[in-house]
Image 1 (tube, rainbow, N blue to C red):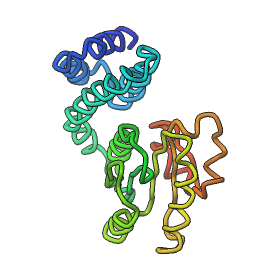
Image 2 (image 1 turned 90 degrees about the vertical axis):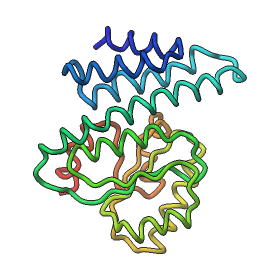
Image 3 (image 1 turned 60 degrees about the vertical axis):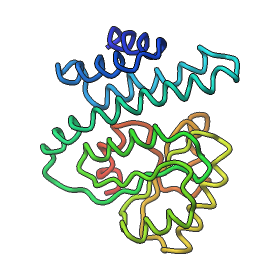
Length: 215
């Protein structure tokens, strides 16, 4: 796994999209890595590492955008493997809306989470970043989710998450299980209670065992 990580990271550092995608997809095809391993052990650390590689803000921002774009392509290219594994799941476990706070710019974590839910037999509806609250309300009204999952990268968005959950409850009642996750909770995991969520998820295994935790 370490060898694969270095190969993918080297391609990303060179901003070689074709190579990064092919290395990742070939590893999936060969059974060298699973989707959760690819996302959690390879792609997520490679994305975060760009912060240390480019300490100057004026270079970091565009480098981060380039790397995020390549990683997004890898994730989208991996979707057929998700569908193939999904065929092995017999029981369907409910609808999930996966989203970010209205002013959150980082959505790749949420996209990965949506794929994890798909792997485990849920029906995820992924809502991208920068979605107005009234539009989110319409999505909830149509999808009728059992779970609402909010991915938060920026710590300063926790206040808006709290307000969002309060507004959803005021509009729709307490029919949903609210789940939160993301780097904003790394330093203070108990903050999920402060924003009004029912639980915090940190990994694919948390989603895999979600039905047991709820029961």
